[in-house]
Picture 1 (spheres, rainbow, N blue to C red):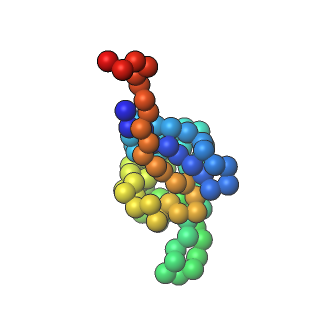
Picture 2: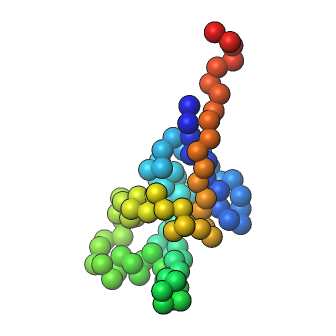
Length: 98
C-alpha cells in the first residue's frame, strides 16, 4: 500500500495519509494549514497570508475552499518548499509469505 508521509520543516514528521487530498485535509484539520499560513511571493519579495489570497479573490475562507486551493498546488513541491514536504512511501501489509 502506498501512503503519503507529511513532514513540516521545523517539526519533522507530522502525519501520514492515503492520498494528497487526504494529506491536505489532515493539515487543515490539525491546524497546520490555516488562514494565517504565510506565503512568499518570489516575484515581489513580499510575504502574505492565505487569508489575503482569499480576500483578493473574494472567495469565502472555508475548509472546503482551503482544501481546493491546496490541491491546485499538490503537484508542485517547490510551492510548499520551506513549509511542508510530502513523500510517497510503501507500507507492508502482510506478515506472511503467501
